[in-house]
Image (cartoon, rainbow, N blue to C red; front, side):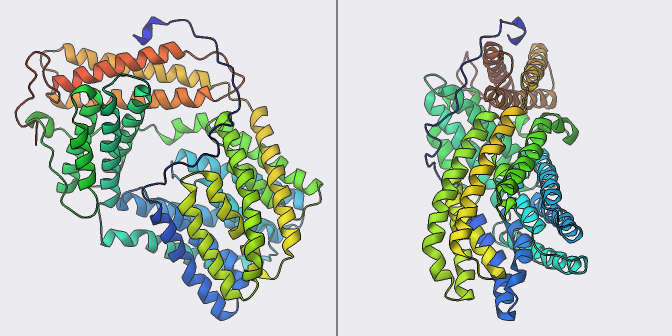
Length: 554
């Protein structure tokens, strides 16, 4: 039991990882959605500006078009609202940047404004869990606008261009709902089934089973969040909920799970075929309302304080360092620093390496492409479209691969306003990248996150309370189906949060020893209680008879 309070083990020697930092992984299952969406959002506005001979305004239309990168993993009901907030957030940052640029020519003041904007964008994106690409695109837009020649009279027109293309991006991202209205929920459910099947393959034992179990519960929790954000229940949603429960059952009892059937159900969720029907015990089938265990926005702000300070300090110092070196584009150093900050120091280091490698290779790609782009402005626009597509194709495999395309695209965008000397442009990009990565990482090291251990303690307490609640209900002769289901879901969420909190804290420096043994014991006892709860609900075979409740199989 986690309340046994074993003594904390000594913290392991923390080394910055190098092995595997640049290793390419598997692409995202929906890589083509943001890739096609961003091309569809960028092409019409830019081609229109090209026809009008005003390609110099493309920076403002690109600001709205890039909103098409967001919210592709969300159900359409939730996506509609999320994209509205993304567009409004982009317009807010752009407005502050344009007004600041029109009021002052002081580079120091502009860098300071950019750093504060970057910190605010980081916090807002993390606290709202908007998902990839997070704050980086918003910071790219606002930082670049800070150093664009601007007058107050031009600001409303430029904001109107960004708002119009943001509305177009919203339409592009919502259009697939006409063809496959339940696509995101189906994919989330399929991911949960496949993750459960991967854990079932381990039988709950052997090396790597704990990681597979944590990944399985995280996928299940993501599926529930997706289903619970779809609005009113429908027949499709009910069928998907039953499949998610089946994934939970496999996680609770991997030895008796049929991994092949789980994968078959996952495959059948592709396209627009009917959702496979997974039967459940009658009592359980009536209680699938789920449990909303997400923390409030205010509760999620506390852990983000060190990240906000790191972002503000790192971006400001990176910009100042770029100015001190006499480089004319401090916004690039600022954006590089803003892109580094992840959940902990270890992940921030990995991102720094990936950013530098990707940008250097991307500069070489730009050197090869720029003679072609200078042939005609139409070719310039086409090259930007190709690189925007390529960035989304590659970035889910590894961040540095995506940067190989993002870097030449960013450099080509500067050509929209007029010819730029390629050699000078490439030199500034490389130097600013190195400065931003170095100064940004040093700022992350300097701003410690000593409360990471406190959050692990709180997560342990929450998991222990959830387990005790479930255990008390199990001891009652008639706990009530709804209460037992709520307790099971609450315990599952608490265990997912515990694992995520422990992993984040493990990558931090300068903190006391973490209670790793207590975390392990809490997870073990919690998962045993989950299995017992599922068995009491009739979702698992009874240990004595080896049979399931009637109607438990499809």
